[in-house]
Image 1 (cartoon, rainbow, N blue to C red):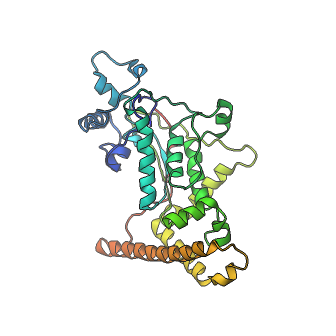
Image 2: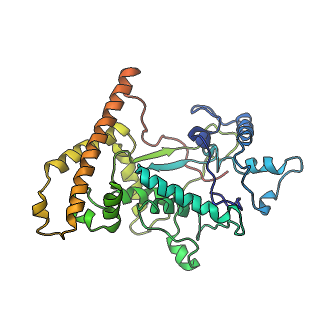
Image 3: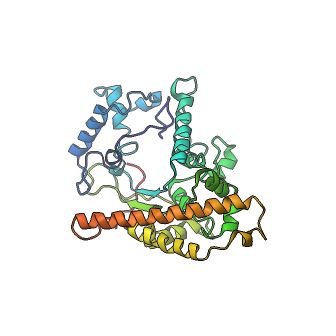
Length: 339
């Protein structure tokens, strides 16, 4: 998502490596040559052929640079090759195929508002920023509640999302209930709906926190800018929660993640109470939820076992040791949020 666009809310950049690193290999420095080559490759891929930019984006364009070339100059490091000028914090949330379809429908619907006019896309930090888009894409999949765009400015100022906060919010949301507490899960409308309709619960194997610094050495961008939290000055939840998630191996190591869930699911299965026990305290509608929950649990146990088997097989086929997995946030310069 970028305020540069006039006929789109967002663009998709094909290929994960190009989106994150342009043409650079993981251990390569960002040079002027690599910067220019990545821009040329982006234009060769026609990333913005269908995208019109706002008129004001032409300010500062050199006379010898075409309008099309300029699109790629002002978008590199933000829309593609993002590690050139930014550090990133990402959270991976596995979702079902049905939920993915809901996300796609939502995102396509957002672009459809502007693709053929007459509306022109306008964004601002408080009322409709890039985090509203990603937040509401997951809301479309019933992960959490929608965050309205274009709210009254004073209300928006108290609720607008920011990137680092949203990572913590996402991880918090996966744990909003003890996954073994059937009472709490059943009485949460969103959780009950996602299990009964999609066979899915938010606390699932594969939830991973990924943290990567900006490319260094770096001939183009300042690498000493910080990505901040907007935090409660008294409780400071976001800083504490983020450090807590970083300190737990299951949030940044896939094998540790799978082993943690294997133990958790075994404990839940061992502590299973009969349906008759639950019906003494829960309404009759609990029956369908109870049955769906234990089908879900068995499927999750199978998933974890398949994942662990695949990791072991991959290791034995290569060097005999575990393959490289997402690790703790690498030590490096402070995260940056712009050139």
